[in-house]
Length: 222
Ligand SMILES: C[S@@+](CC[C@H](N)C(=O)[O-])C[C@H]1O[C@@H](n2cnc3c(N)ncnc32)[C@H](O)[C@@H]1O
Image (cartoon, rainbow, N blue to C red; front, top):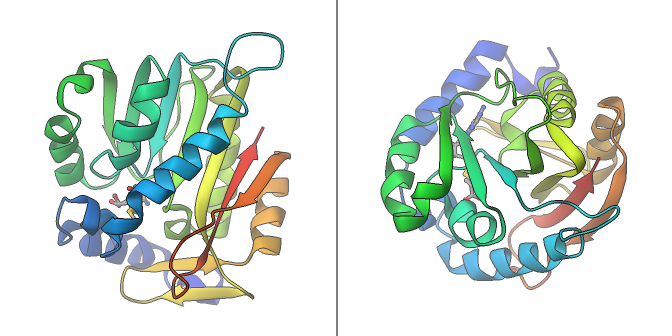
């Protein structure tokens, strides 16, 4: 394994331990930046609306998968309003338990709450119109990220789309010892996407975030 990740099983178990002690709130999901959630969701909505709809080449609105979903912050305000059925996957059971309450009435349209690390998760082949992966890829090693993206490609329906929205480093790979993750620069992310056999349909930087945090980029892949 690459040095930056250290020993693989410790890289994953330290992250699991970290998230177990985070409060199951929007602020907890966003490392104390709960106040940027609306800007984030509105930016995502604008991005996604370019692709979804009826007709040739459009992405359907049947099924979405929220990866590293946490308490369902994105499912609640982005995916459930746009898609008929949503599945959530996250490694932290406490967050998924909270999601069942946090999503309120709309939780009726959640079919599955999968408690699983993305490094082990196998999306059902051909099920999803959109697979949304936000603020979680830094918890996967390069190899596991590539393999996960390949499995996601197999999980798409015709016209389906994978979306990664995440922090991007200015240069190289920046490890975070606190939550046991890494932040990659854009050229490396591009290489991993390419290794997974995916193409970039569109990529955009999220604007209007605080200056002191990492740049955040959204990539649509298929
Ligand atoms: C920064 S939070 C983001 C939550 C959500 N995506 C959002 O934007 O509100 C990171 C989430 O990733 C989950 N997580 C961490 N490592 C994971 C892994 N290997 N597989 C799946 N989920 C993981 C954590 O439990 C946590 O819910």
